[in-house]
Length: 169
Image 1 (cartoon, one colour):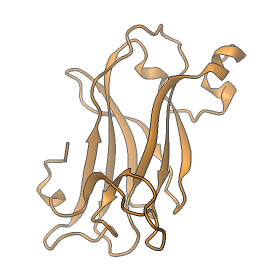
Image 2 (tube, helix red, strand yellow):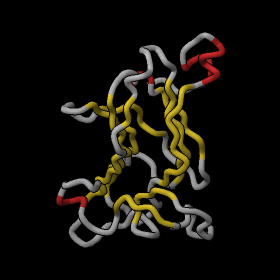
Image 3 (cartoon, one colour):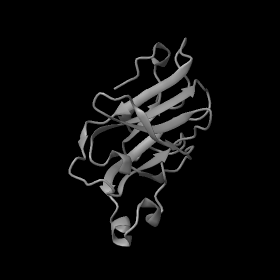
Image 4 (cartoon, rainbow, N blue to C red):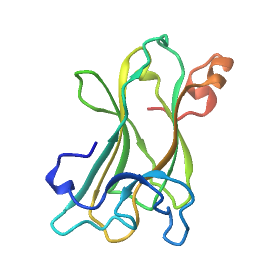
């Protein structure tokens, strides 16, 4: 799903393809990414990048409150503030809310773990959201290997996500 913001139309948008994470690196596998195939340069008349990719609905109602749920993925790119990459979530009929802001990316993929416990016991959707002013340097947000799981380490340790080095929300 693409943003409806008229400033967001153009070539810079979320897509799944083999765009390389570094312009010098050959593509090795597909990844979800925000760019125009090479950088964050926008089309004529476009003033900002405002893109998102939305998941199908996840049924997390079978998990009891307190279950240490984790969202994990790999992230890469060369964007930095004022660009913002975030993971958002919502339940049916509710507005999108930030679950976490993703740290500025690097050219190599890095693993991110986010505490997803607020979603336990609900029907939810996830959304990856990227917003940035148009830029001629750098290249956009790349995401791959997304997983939503119960953290066995936290269950075994008898603690919440903090027991196993999961980022707080």
